[in-house]
Length: 292
Image 1: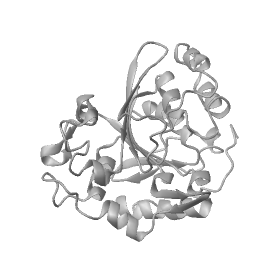
Image 2 (image 1 turned 90 degrees about the horizontal axis):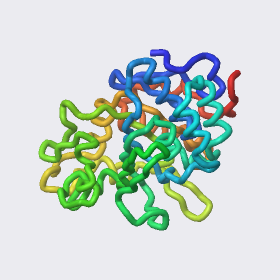
Image 3 (image 1 turned 30 degrees about the horizontal axis):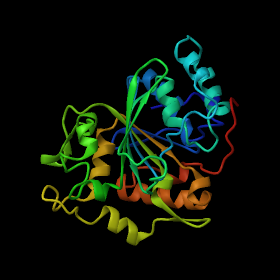
Image 4 (image 1 turned 60 degrees about the vertical axis):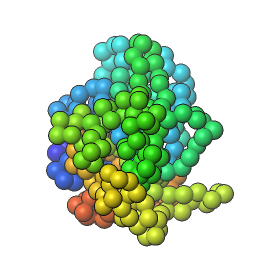
């Protein structure tokens, strides 16, 4: 399925591929998820605002760098898609740390379920952040840990007393813990992956997960009465199969460089996508250019 218009090849140089029959779009900066949501509507893949399940080492939920007025204006006007692309390029943070709240302000994102691989307690001690946008719509951001923890004892996908559950996590995801699966009529959502989820930082150095970490995090059964034989990798695979669309931000600047991003993308393709993506056709080392 062709999703990206030709005039955006400078931002999205990689044609959409398919994994489990779902379109996958790979690009560099995470904020470029937002125009993809708009384009996905035209293809009948999603309805806006869209729910997102995301894997990211960082929360990316800071207030918009330059305020929300221009975002509100776009949302409440009839400006063309090109204006949205221009806003993402010139208005959002180049560090890609405000795209979630910006997407909510633009009317593109409803709720976000976020799996983090790094604890950032300084930002918010809570498990759920509520954000009321400029048109008085309230959104939820569920701040979860790594899947292996959330699928184990007292995790958000197991424990009905968990704070995230009381805020509606299971309903938002369409999750049924008794069958460790999404319900057949689960809500439509976008699966979004930032490759830096699969990294860890030490001082100024960033290292991709090695085989030992992948095995420990995704290939060892969860410790729960519900999931004694359930692998976290199965959970990620199911999210992919049940999603409407998969977006992947390579984020080489937060992965330790282009070569490390490429390695992580290959690991993700092998472990979760059954090698269905053609990695050789994916370009990571490029400069984002607006409207070629």
